[in-house]
Image (spheres, one colour):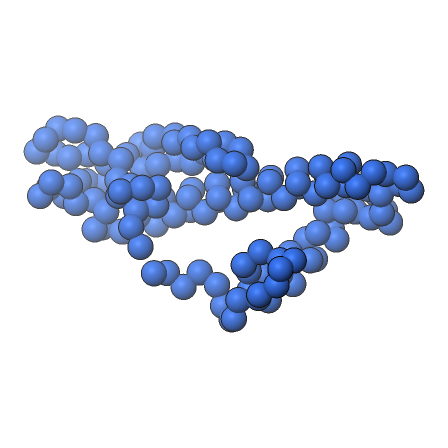
Length: 137
């Protein structure tokens, strides 16, 4: 399994399963997002209902999650290992083309350019991905 995060995971009933380093960085991002959403003081107008604040927070959070996933799979596809080019006893050759992949997630659509390779003997295009998105760990 890849080393995805550093440090000990933070355990709390109020937080998701992230490291203290990630939690601290997200706190900074949240402050900046509140400034962008609510203006200079980063405070919603007095009388704003909590459901509106919740909606604003969820919209920002879902877009952050969608961008996190989209950037991750897009950059992962750029770093395809040679072992991913093996299929049915044949090794595909890397090509210059890509295929746009689209996945619907709970945070919205995630799109990335998946590298197209060519199985020379079989004369087939090949989009290596393993058993699921991102292959196996």
